[in-house]
Length: 518
Image (cartoon, one colour):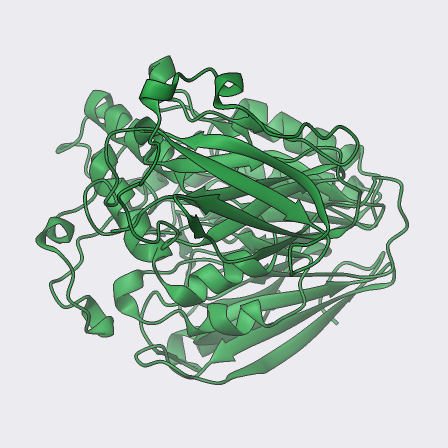
């Protein structure tokens, strides 16, 4: 990636150090490089706005200029465009506390991110962008409280797996109506698969360019534009700051480090090129901090976000560093899965996580994780079989983490996506419960779903650590206090059409200091 291809990161101008009339020259760009006068495009904010990665004094703000979002360049010319941004204390955007100008550059698909600084901790803010005479919608965000702040309540939701062609994002519309401090996305934000001419279950015509699998930067960018054009997803992004992780479908189904799903078709050198394109497109379309920018096919993406003395979230990356799935299969049992050299985290990430658990100073330690961690036998009868793409295929890493759970002063809870099902389980070590895992279903992947099925009922019967199963679509809402963690499984009856109502299918509680489901 050359320097000219990198998006310019804007510095903030806050009420403490406001600089009026930001000049384009301050951005290091000459007037001949910038669109001036009539911009020549319609409303460029068709992909909405977003915020994310909140810290006590800053939060990332994101948008992308795309007046024709499904076209190759989003309908933008090959030139830089100035974008103004504002942060205010009110939704009417009158009490402005920070503002500035940045550039949307063609080398970054005209996506921009700004990081207003010197904001107040634990404070609700509103933000808006302006470009070419057009204004974006107003987004709501919130900074994290100071690390030593005593928080009485914190509410967040988590979601994953949103195959656009499988159904509508009704669950996001309901999520946007919740009063949330944070949204966590656990991966499979896009699927790399081709999209049919009628948009699958959506019945919407899409251009021919979407009929191929995403393997190039241009094709991944198109997929993100298609997904982000959804109004319900935009509403959820605009309602609260997001903490984003990544799973496999942002790149390639079930990939493991440099091993593609089909290594015969994509040997490691060519797959690294694909991974670089996928990581770059993901970064361009997410409210991530500048330090999270990938370097080619590599990106140190695991990170920790703390919210006062109440909770810290350890966001994992279980794809980039993992060993290939064991046994040459995805479901089964073999000695290989017990090999001490096998890893789902990689050495550096594992040591980082163990250290964070050991040194935790919060009441709750939440691990934001892609694939189920609790052990789950899926073989009927006396034999055993496990899903080997999950932590059951990487037993040594799981043993190290659950031992750290057991020794941590915090109460550990794992929040998980990937499997398009709701599960609630105890995480155990030598028969003792040391953590709780809440697995959330998909937003749309898999279509309408169903309340239960024989396979799910069997797993609950076969595994005494598994307490709940549901196969509908939706999201999970969690309310934390110093005394308890309450989880609501929020489901919709269908995604094949718009307008499904939402309901709480099941509620669970975890008591501080007592891991396990109540």
